[in-house]
Image (tube, rainbow, N blue to C red; front, side, top):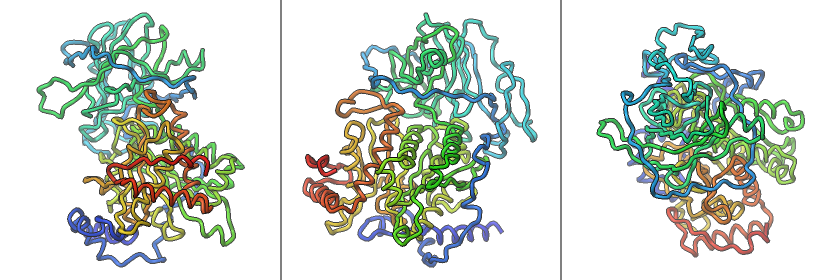
Length: 612
């Protein structure tokens, strides 16, 4: 029975999402045979897709009051029942990178026997895989850790606060049991030195990178040192100027100051350890808190939670003007039962001209720890639903399908990379397993439908990068022999660079498809026939370009690149003869200057601004 079911699913998947080899590309010939093997032959053995594509009633559910759904957590997760909220804030000036002196201390991580465990939270179940969820998680009623059970048997929940030593009244107090929070353990080494451990992605043994936690009982006259000792990545922008983020609730209340950069004597280095487990790295820094008895938050980057998105989408849906051209629908539900929504933004058309519109598909937050992708998506949505002439023109020209959060389960529990399946969803776009990766499966179905109905002019998946500066794009190289096809995928990124020269770097872009990227959305959507299929990466740090050299990106910067993306899309798609001439000129110069997939050439276009 299982064999028959799997066979049917594979046949259905292949019928709904056939790969369309692009003529002249190496992925259409030997590469496909060598890398994809049997899976490639399975797809080829199925009849080509027809206009009678199967329709599923549960794919496009009309949104009702489900927008207000409380986040659903795995039952083993303990959750503080309070809404963590942060005010909007724009720094008056770009915040500079930290400049290393080369003399920063690098304390060696030590074990619990050298200190006192003052915080210890790691949700563990009897089986190391996701099995059940409940709305709101297992509620933490008070600081004494009394628990109110949600429906169901929670005998398998590990009460991991039993081994915490009694606290000194002067100790810092740590907490991470809230939405998107990530902190596993804190060991107090001295009154001013604390060693922190991050929680690995749930149901995995790795991916420790994202952090977001709360500290209370602060003292303003003490210089504290915090060491986060179990990062998994070998390199980090913390070695190149990145500083952590701090949010003071007292500063927010008294001075309307929100997230700002913090930390001094910052260093990131490999642990000197003989452990057999995977190598770990330490981020260590000094920090001085602005107020006594304050409650502060520290984060790797600006948080953007599932609840933040729900409230934002609800406001759009309830706006009588914006709802005329913006439709909010339910794409699917996740393993935990959380909603994956998508927006359709387009001007209502009843005439033949409206039926000529092509689609633009943009997705974000497949990796939970890459919060800049959510802020870029917000910038795109804000622009598209705005009242500017450019926004109106884009709505008249395209049908936008936007999936703001592909992995809400991972976002909710504070994962860095994976969903509750324990897998990286951005390696599953060739999958046939609808139940294991529902947001991936239904996104591909939506893309295939849109291709059948009107065609897709562009796809872009929004990400963030923890090891590179600037904002840049990964594309898919076209190897067509004729000049009209070669390097065309580089035109849009180059135009975006000209529109956002202090943030977006064309030189950082890459268009070669690397080994191991075959299962990403960018590559699979390209193979489905969308030539302009991109991944846009925004640095967790900041810019090295122009007047912004050596400064951090702010929330406003991430939203601004979303706006620039839309403005560039208008230039890129404009059929005005002047714009067409500009695009042809860009292509000719790219070819002449020898631009390539691995080393794109930033050509000089002195007349670009004049032609805009």
